[in-house]
Image (tube, rainbow, N blue to C red; front, side, top):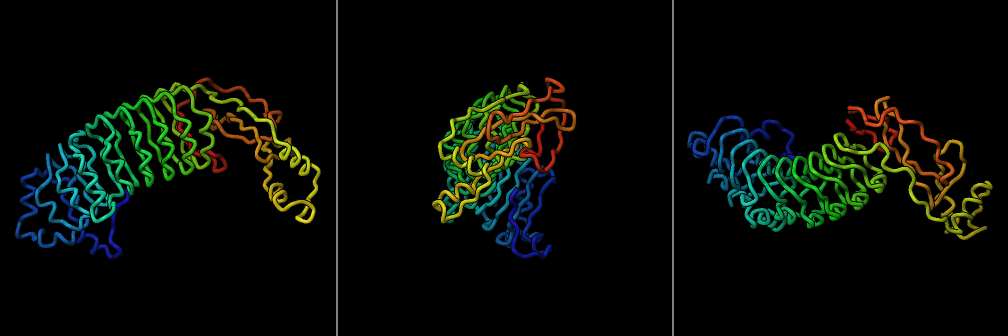
Length: 370
């Protein structure tokens, strides 16, 4: 969660800018009494308040006095019984809005509410929005207009589909949709170029779109508790992926054996022969572009092969025993299909329940296959 804090490192200063009414069993009337109490003088200091915590109370709505806090950056409304977000919320320069575990429905989010947040002050201020654990039945389309939003949490609802306009949210770093009724992931998800974590666990998903391979910055992909029988072979292109959760899926142990190899070009073949001969031609022997091409050679990972490849390679999935409990699919780049080593028999046809960290040398260092 991206929480706003002042530039000052003084703890007392931060505390003065935080109004904490969390876990006080307040209802709407008692909260309004607290805010308007002359003895506490909160309204006089409302311009200094940047964080307001109203979590874990008995609120069914929000106080009218909320709009007096004109500099509010963080508002935590989690774990109440709120049925709607009032217009006052859209008048605040919020950076973080947490409204998880309430009674919000799609009609609780007026069409203009989130767009007003986006347009407040001439630009989007909201960076984090948490609507998890509510009663949403479909993806809130208003959210797609929040172009600066980095963290979106809408898990634990009853959402059945993801908006095809999700591609508009180019600033998203985290998209959490776990615990819904989603059966299909649109191709548009692959357009979220900044996405680092995609949470799709505990849904009804059977397949992933091939566009997932375009999420070059993706580090965490949570797919456990779905209906997936296989993974798209393109998933191996996610070179930054360090966490892949697959448990409680009807996945087969081997989802990819070999991938199709296109015939190498004459340039590729010539380059391989030059590298194999050990010659090192310089810029006065051949054009500089060819020198750069030869320098881009990659070594075959087969320890018994000293060959190289350039643009043409065999992408092979090798299942490696990990911790003696389950087999992890790892990507290999080989110069030829002849370099594919015979695979050792699997220890079991079903991955054992486990959650562990693999060594840092693995492309997927954390694999949850329980």
